[in-house]
Image 1 (tube, rainbow, N blue to C red):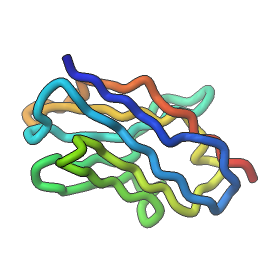
Image 2: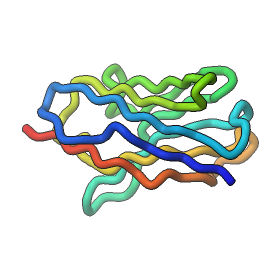
Image 3: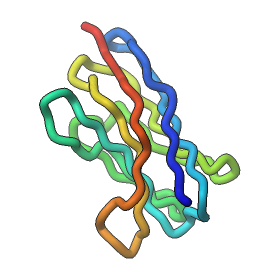
Length: 119
């Protein structure tokens, strides 16, 4: 059974940094794409960043390009989201997700971790 467990959220000030972690278990993820999404109060969930586990290729939402970096550690089966220069508009619940590279829908989701950025 696939499990994704996020951690690392918290309350920070604008301009600060945070690193989110997503511990993945239950299968091998070499043929998977891992993504980070976020949902702010009253808004729809939106894409933040994704990484192809085996190739390491990444893509980002325009709103976080240059500030956020997604990476993975194969030995730890963990995906990270390094968030720098945080802004109040980054406040949201952040979710880790996984999908096979042969499909377009993310099938597995974590429980989410809250990130709050104060001005």
